[in-house]
Structure formats: C-alpha cells, structure tokens
Length: 334
Ligand SMILES: Cc1cc2nc3c(=O)[nH]c(=O)nc-3n(C[C@H](O)[C@H](O)[C@H](O)COP(=O)(O)O)c2cc1C
Image 1: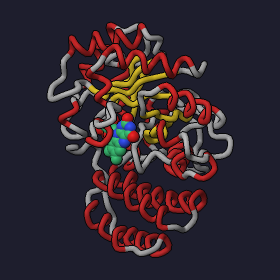
Image 2: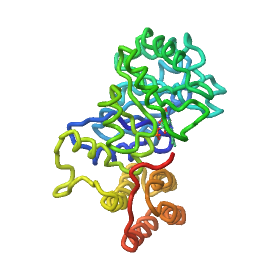
Image 3: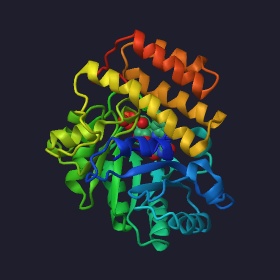
C-alpha cells in the first residue's frame, strides 16, 4: 500500500506509482488526509486534493474528523468517486489537528474512537480502516494498544494500519515493527505495518517474517516509485512494465531511474494540474522528500528549488543527469 501524505498523495503521485506497478498487484493508494469539515463545502470537480484519474480504483480517501454530520456528508460525497474503501486518521500529531480532537488525539479516548468507527460504518458498506500510531504520547504502550485496537475491532473496523512510532517521534528514527507484529498476533482483523519501510526487502520482511497482513510505504515511494515493481519481481510476479526494460536493482540503476521518474512525474503533474504554481510546488516537495535517498540528493534538490517553472526544472534535471552519474541508497536514517 502507498500511504496518505499531505502534499504528496495526490492523483499525479498515485498515477506515477501505478505506472510502475505490475497490473495484477493493485496496491491500495491513499489520498492525503481530508478534513470532513472542509469537504462539506468543497466541490469534487474543483479541488486538486480530491481529483482522481479516469477509471482509478484501489484508492482510499483518508478522513479526518470526529463529528457524524460532517463524516456522513463527506462519505456520501466521496462515494461518488468510487473509492475502494475509507480510512480514518488517528495518527496525525500536528497541533492544529489536535486542537479539534482529530488525528492521534482520538487514541486518547477508546470509546470515542470506537464511536467514530461506527459513524463511518453507518454511512458506507465499503471496508473501513484506521491508521494509528504506536502510542498517543512519548512512548509505545503495548497493553494500551492491545486494548485500543480491540475496541476498534469490536466497533466493526475491517482492518488497521499501525505506524509504530509514538506521537512524540513524529516521523523520525526507527519504527519498531515488533509492535505491529504483536498487535497482528492478537487481532482477528488484518493489521498492516507502516513506518520506515524503505526497500522491497523491508516490505516482504514485515509480511513474511513478522506476520503482518500488509506493508504500507510512505516516503520511500517518493524516492523509488518503482518499489512495488521490485516487490512483485521478488514475489515472482513477472509482468512487463515498460517494454524491454528490467526492474532497477543496483544503486546505479535506481539513480538512473530516479531521473526518469522525476521527469515523468512533472509531465503527469502538468497533465492533471497544468503548468501552474501548484504543480511546481508539488514537484519541489516530491524531490525534497525522495532525493534524501540520492547520494548527491542535496545538490539535486537545490536545482529543483532554483527552477522558476516546470520547463526550467525539466531542463535543469536533464543537464544534471547527463553530467552526474549517481547512486541511490537502499536505506537511510529517517
Ligand atoms: C509529508 C508527510 C505528510 C503526511 N501526511 C499524512 C496524512 O495525511 N495522513 C496520515 O495518516 N499520515 C500522514 N503522514 C505519515 C505517513 O503516512 C507515514 O505514516 C509516515 O511517514 C511513516 O512512514 P515512513 O517512515 O515510511 O515515511 C505523512 C507523512 C509525511 C512525511
């Protein structure tokens, strides 16, 4: 699965990942978190964040909220886009989200969190999941997490994703996958691991060795959007993606593919959002996130920041790629 990420998980990113994915794999691709309050007044055809590709399926809108009147209206509206299911955000640690008792704040009140699950379930027959953290504060509290996820399961939740970094760790440091392993053992519903899954081997490890039901990849998908292709090949799914091309494997092959992917991403952005300031910002953010896995990531990131238009950016990337052979790291310190 490809994670919800504000500023990244828009239609252009989901399409880039889809282009690199073996057609039979159908990974779930999440939207960024969508405020159920704001959705009420938003027009589906007038919002970049709500745009979906023609015929796009296997996408999952992520809901942010805790009030039934907003949740019901949002679910009804989003259902017209034909999503695969819905996810509820119970992991976001940002202050302005906590003020409204949304995001990870919901982890502090089991009963209320279970009610929010029931609210969403009342308004859709599609699968409903929750994405939550290992802990609502500084540390992971396994006993609490077992109780909390049990409450959500009893409320009718269909599956859940755990990002085991506690709230205080934000997105930094190692994610302790054994927390997800523990919860996956005690829950009847599928439990998906997220956090620090950077390579195809990491994703396969959490499923095959730790018994998780799936792996959700976040930032690493902005570095190697072909990661599902790599996973597919390792699992024996041999489907041609681009004619005559083999999956990038070595650090050099991945770096060469990275240049190609960024150029392709810019074209997809222009296709959906036009050659606009919005697209330029999204291209910069994609490069800022993914180029950390690039050996000369900082200088590459600088040229993207300097470009004043997407055409300038493409020219600069082409020149850079012709003059700099590069490598990609497998794992980095997040
Ligand atoms: C820029 C950015 C935006 C994010 N936005 C969301 C979001 O909208 N909803 C959510 O549940 N998590 C969000 N996250 C958290 C990611 O989904 C994921 O849990 C986190 O990055 C850990 O995974 P990783 O270590 O593979 O990056 C965001 C993370 C980043 C870096």
